[in-house]
Image (cartoon, rainbow, N blue to C red; front, side):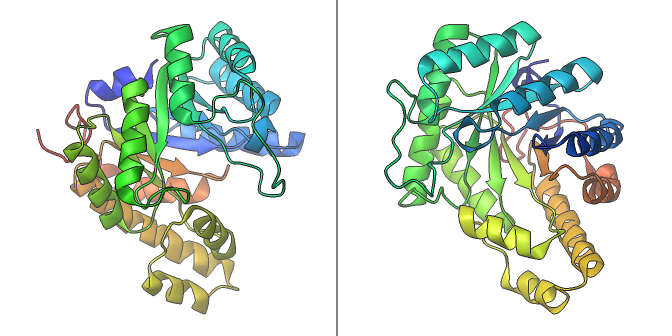
Amino acid sequence: MKIGDILRKGVFSISFEFFPPKTPEGEKQLFETIRKLERLNPTFVSVTYGAGGSTRDRTRNIVKRIHEETNLTVMAHLTCIAHTREELIEILNDYKNIGIENILALRGDVPRDKPDWRPPKGACRYAKELVELIRKEFGDWFSIGVASYPEGHPESPNLEWEVKYFKEKVEAGADFSITQMFFVNDYYYRFVDMCRNAGIEIPIIPGIMPITNFKQIRKFASLCGATIPQSLVEKLERVEDKQEEVKKIGIEFAINQCIDLIENGVPGLHFYTLNKSDATLKIYESIKDKIPRSVNVRGGDGEA
């Protein structure tokens, strides 16, 4: 099923993100997680794509397994900056032949450890160009998602520029967006308001990262520019060496964050699971009675 079509019907979306494991043991654990989360009947799940195309085959194989062995709608992430256009078309044709109908189109990270690195000749240098390529070569076969950044991409000079670049991806043919993780809902609301004022009407699904490992999440947040509220930082620092206490605080925070987002009319919730089910299951159990049956088809500010 195409995610864009589902969202246009006003379905409130619950979705989960996984990454391709490096080992057979990791893959076994991932599919145990998938089976547990499948019971929640998510709208879709997605599988990430490593920097520089480093997980090309693993991403493809996990996407194929989910598609063939579960009842889940699966979306493949695809980054473009390290591939030629011919390689991208080859990857997309493969997904089409498998029966995959959903792609999250991303630029991808520039290698931090290679200061002289340059994209290959003929690469799509921006996500907008990847969206354009997909639409040109495949028409409406794929529903296309893109990333958005409520606090701005680390390379954007300000939020005005962020919205400008985001709008270019939408005009190129994106159907919906999933945000970078954030912990301050007001940043998301501000960003959505700016997007609506700029004429961007696609659903902007908030990305939720439950904090279960403070050191790990603090590192993620510093790399992507996500603000962790100082009050939460102080709570977590006091119990940093007590994993279960960190997890308890992180889950409680995520529950309250999700409830506030639902009450403010978001089109869905996308959970970054880190291939584990426990935290996501606990959050879902606490918010399931508040999840609306449907939302406005624009997926924006909660107005009918």
